[in-house]
Image (cartoon, rainbow, N blue to C red; front, side, top):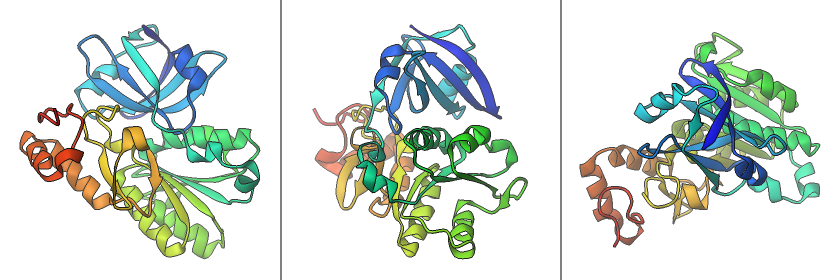
Length: 296
């Protein structure tokens, strides 16, 4: 059992929990995720790692209540425990293994949209711990949905907050903020790391392609099973079939077929859609765990 040692609400329907999981904490890195199972009959919930404390043996997760499973999870309190807490899964951020001298030369901008701020935070924190200064944009629809602002300000060289409705910070979406920094303030970036809703990452990637800035996106929002079994996170990157949970979740944003991914996610929600995906995708469809029969 994995005990919840801390819980707090970050915003309406968005919660943070520190979970006692020493072995996971010992081995996880920014960019990776865990799978939480509340009880023996509960569903598997993939969640990116927001933070970890190797000494305390805890892993921090952030989640938004979007369905029955996460709604039940939100009812758990400090002292309660999860049945399973599996990880770390997926590949760590590619920045972790980059040559220090090369990394030092880069001006990096992290772009966090909504709950995507949670997986951005450990990457920015890691960069700070290694002595690298990076900028960060936190964007949301309104002030009430901005999370982890104070935590981010402690680890980023500059933190820019923007809201679509202008209720807090810069008025506009994250793309408007990028344009403001690059076109109006003369900021120069060699790399953008964008994490948030798929539609946000699509438009950030389109903009950075125009600006000639290399871009990494994290496709964790499209994961369902988290082990490569269900096939829900199948996507095309540079013409090749990938699975976000085992090959990612990070990919080159300029090579991801976002339109295909978003269309596929909509189809995956219905039984008829899953059957159509199986017929269309053939042997690359899945490994058999999506409920459509898969490949035997």
